Length: 502
Image (cartoon, rainbow, N blue to C red; front, side, top):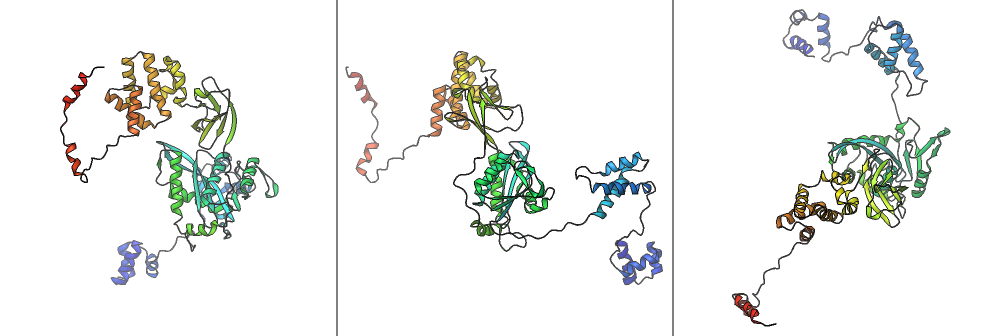
């Protein structure tokens, strides 16, 4: 383009001849005439196919393989690399990149552009649901999370919630949370063919649905619609929404302390998105949802219970096994038969009286999730096991240094067994008070010289209920009493008590 500009300036502004321009700029007269005819460069057009002497005799074989791909299953078709290996076995000596380029061009020539019918939805009528993946920094670790995304088709209002997995409990919990957020239930929801809902795809567009999904659908009385396999565009609205959520709700990668904090972040982003006005729409998303809300089905009196119930047996180390992992049980509440409720992000362990323990749910296998507080009663009976107790050793690697100072002080003034028992009594305060307050109380007890159980409890009470100094006495309205407070204290009056006989 710069050469073309120089040619045009030389001819039209400097009044130079074509021959002179050709001599100075080293271009042919034909090229100069093209530049003078138009300031825009012509697009290069290949007049004839480039020679491919090595590939030429194999083009017919490649065409046959590509034609066979049309009839083969989508995931069992020839790739460019496999085509290269096939013709190489037949004697081809050229490069793989040549084959890849030729195959890509053949596929491009056959590919037809995808076009779709524009759709319009009635308020409250339809919603779409899909899963997506994203990365977050959760409690200091980079973690891949699963995003439950549901979108109302009329208002385009979106709900997002993050889970560790895409299991059925998370699937149902996402629905329950979405319905609560939308303040109603759409009449129909479109899905792909995920196993959590579809047990088997039948002929004629029919599905054999999971029984638990049928019970869930019956609870909320909505209709389900499943996409044709491989036709994700049938729920294109939520497909696009998943990408929008990743780009706008999770960039930059958030640094979050817990699953609860992550979902609070996503909920705030959903609420803020209500202010967005989609291109071509007269109303914002929030305003359109206000119109749609009255058309949604009302929520049932009680939400669907989103957990699994599993009977378990107590193991010798005061643990139960659930989903291939060991979870601790309070040693004070042990009994032979227990029940585990498995939620999406946590589990609850129950005995005959109710919930006795709660743990974050682990989706790995062979892990031990131990709460050290569950073992403190046992260690009170066996203080010699304190140093080697696995739950305590894990906790000890993380607890505040002031705890070590307190333990060392107790061991210096008492026998080791008694020191450990008194230390355990202090650790048991974690069942009722926040860890930060106990740490402060221990530090104060060491400072005040009362580093024992009662001293820590006293400091803890003072932290939770600080003494309030009474306001100074105001005697302006009672001047006749002002001289009373000004009288000096006579300590000799107390000596009179020494003279009193019993």
